[in-house]
Image (cartoon, rainbow, N blue to C red; front, side):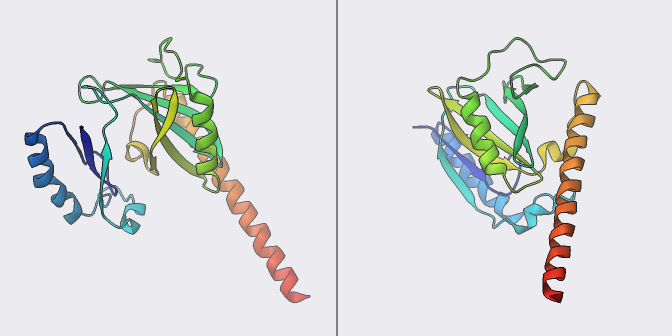
Length: 197
C-alpha cells in the first residue's frame, strides 16, 4: 500500500512511497528535514514552536496527487476555498467563495466537492478562536478528510488574480485582528475594574 512521509514543521517536505526506490529516498531525505529549522528566512515564527517530527500516512491518491481543498477561515468564519489540482505535474489553483462562486480569474465551472458543507463546518470549528487559519481537506468517497493546518499560505507571497482578491483577504484579516484587539482591551478593562471594587 502506498504511503506518504512528511515533516510536520515545514512546507514541501514529503515523499510519496510507492516503490522500494521511493522508500530509500525517504530514508535518505527525511532525517535532513528534522535537522533544519524551517521558516526563518521569511520570519514564519510559528514554526519555531513546532516539535520537529515525521508523519507517515496512508496515501489516498492514485498516480496523481489528490485534489486539495484549502479553506481560509477568519475569526471562525470560512470565507474562501482554494482548490489545488495537478500538483507534481501541472499544478494550478483557483479560488471560490463558500457558495462555490468563482473568485479568481482562472476559476472555471468546476463542480464543488460533494462534502463542501461538511468541510466548511469542520473548518469553522477548527478555526474558531484564531484570527486566521487555513484548514486543508481532501475528499474520499464523498466525505472530507482532514489534511493539515496552515498559518502562512504561500509564505504570504502567493499572487492572486485578480489582485483585488488578495486585498480583500488582507482586509478580512486586518478586521479580525482589530476586533480581537478591541475585545482584549475591553476584557482587560473589565478585569481592572473588577479588581478595584
